[in-house]
Image 1 (cartoon, helix red, strand yellow):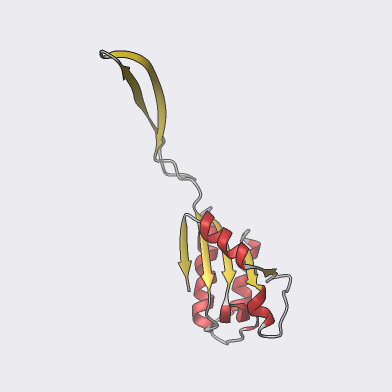
Image 2: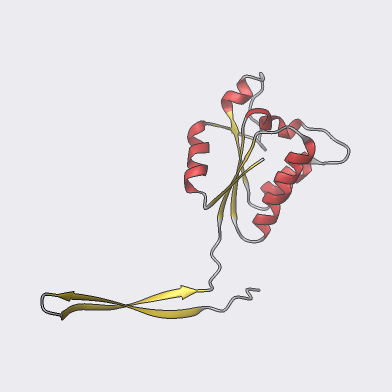
Amino acid sequence: MNNFKTIVLATWIVVIAGFGQIVAAEVIPVQVGSQAATKIGIVISSNDPETVWNAFRFANFACQKGDSVSVFLLGKGVEAETIKDKGFDVKGMMQSYVSNGGKIFTCGTCLKSRNAGGTELCPISSMADMYAIVKQSDKLVTF
């Protein structure tokens, strides 16, 4: 349930030409207090279990709040799916994130340098995908 109230303010745009004559006027409604989804980009370049687990925990939280979240795995981050740690179920957190509507992008060059390939959970992506995530995100977080 949305606790925000929508308030509509009217803003006048007045164009004055020549000797103070109004030649155009327009009322533009402005919405205040609405909560639009935020586009969040997350770049993970760590293979530390706790760090990666927390990154996906944050991604899950943002998805549950209605935001659009994209995760790009870069460098050591491409190892995320294979992290095994008793205290931090990284793969489980990643699967929850995808179930919540999140998308994971995995650097193909970084996978190749590790003699690895993409998976269903972590498909191969490129710098063009990372660039698009950075460019289109309202907020960008790195881990």
